[in-house]
Image 1 (tube, rainbow, N blue to C red):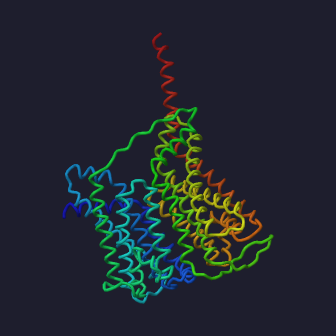
Image 2: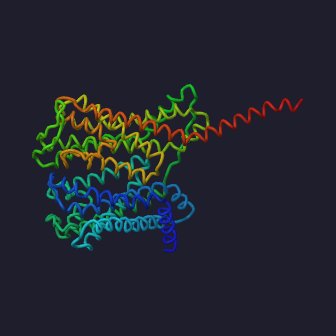
Image 3: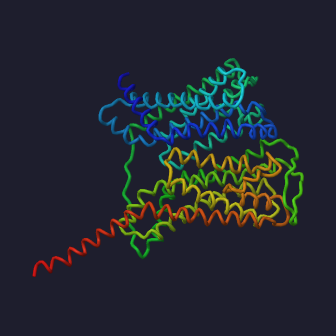
Length: 518
């Protein structure tokens, strides 16, 4: 027990040492519990969900999101260190208990942050029930984050898997969609959500909603503990990469990135399956009714009625594209930022290296767009498919470049959190035509405004009128590409200058030696 206590304390200190963790501890609850609660409650009414109960459920969603990502990166980043401790003689059970204890303490912390935000925002009839529900949410996702960390090595894959589980749980759970649908009963927090908002499911059997929620908690924690113990005992090393020559630096940079992709088939699977599941299920859960949306037709604004299941699926596609493109850009920049500095120091030209990274991001964007549109074309009858595809690609490029900026500036946990929150607030809340007849005036400042206006126009009207949206989106591409180039040059520049000075010094020494000899 002494070893467990010492390790847990050290793990918590490591978590607290990163100031960004403390920042997102405030940012995420504010986004979900304060900013997005009311719009999501409005969306729940359209989708057949529980309406105002969404505002309470957002507390659990925020706590679950923070707990899962914190636990995933804690277990993944420490895998090598934990394995060395086990080889040195520390029992695997001690490491696992310390990791899970740390995760549960973090769950208490993030639940508290979410609850404080809720209590500041609104009066709560039964605060103890809500607090217990938020803690159960976080504990379940501690188990999910630890399980993904034990199985999935690549951080892109792990982050996307967690986001997929969380998105399915939230958007297709009983708060946002109908609690009576059979598929919803398999979501991790289905029963605890209904218990938390005091809406008995009627299909929980003898255990009751709380009993099944606690069973999910125990299964998640026990299963992830076994997976962590197994991962501590086995592993593989990594192989160093070779430096490309100058004449083929651009091609080599791109080829090495594609080779990394080929070694990671799980990434391609996720890029394809996440949009498919997300978009297809969005059509299934939407109530069959009409909704009024404002569009531009022949240069003038008109309000027109559209079939909601089709429109919902068409607006879900850009959210999936933006989220996955942001994560892809984030990890391409983040995983290579230290290696790129060493490559430039070794003589690789920055321009060739940077263009190669852009090529990698471009491939990820095209795959994501293709996967999203492959399912969209089946369930959404867009009026102008050419413009719709072009707008989807433009949106993916904008958010992939934004992800690269985040990758250069932030760490893994904070980067993933921001990479998910920004598309969610931009496209899912601010721009959504399902929540308001037209976006607010300040929405034009968000990166998804231009491409999303193009998507709405191309999907719902017969004539393309969003030249302004095209110009705004293209402007974002230019600005973000320049920012990425500037940050890349700043991060790799000093090392290159040091290498150049070292070469000049060696050349000067060679010229001085003959003179000294004479």
